[in-house]
Image (tube, rainbow, N blue to C red; front, side, top):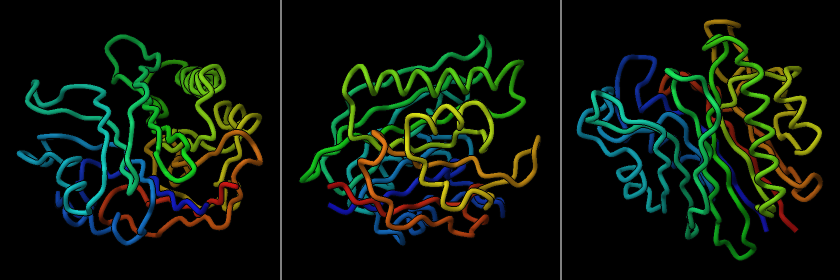
Amino acid sequence: MKIKVLNYNIHSTLGTDGIADWQRTAEMIRSFDADVIAIEEIGINHRSAPGVDAPASIAEFLGLNVIFGKTMNVWNGKGQYGIAAFSKYELKLVEKVFLPTPSGHEPRCFIVVKILAPKPFFLIVTHFSFQGEFESDDDYRLNSAKQITEKVLTESYFPAILCGDLNTVHGMPAIDYLHKHWDICNDIEPDTPTTSCQSCGPCQIDFICTYPQKTFTLESFTITPDLTISDHKPVSAILKLE
């Protein structure tokens, strides 16, 4: 079975041109014709897009199923913000798990979603703390990678595809840890930036990974060179699950 995967941090539908347009974001997502889509920085009545329920609007517009994983309330409690999983297939939320972050900083989580495809599998969507957000943030990203992997192993959430803005790069502890347990699709193109970080400039921090190793065959991996619709580039892969 072939699976088209898209991971995309949509920056709350706010483009680098200062325009918030959920339909423009949805059209970008549509262009991939992906079977499963992992989205970071998506909201309901977010300050960048008042009155817009982005998960529901995008899902209806594209004819997809969706599960929204709220990480926090925003805009004085008027809005919600988090991550989401979309799919052509029926979805089932298995778990939403909060990751460790210091008090007073943005909460982070991951969602485990069962994709009810002809060959069912799990999609895990996450968004780690950013570089320089707080002291020892590399340790927190490493612990987050460990927590996700241990959950997948102990609960048998596999075969699994892990997608997310991991806010770290090749050669850093979290990615080194994931390499020991997961196949990382980005390894085919490790030097192409997916965004530009304040602390490190252009860098690749948006990832697609699979578990267990050698369970999925990677047929293609693409970083789409658009930094207008969002401040992150879409990252996509075609995988084959035997």
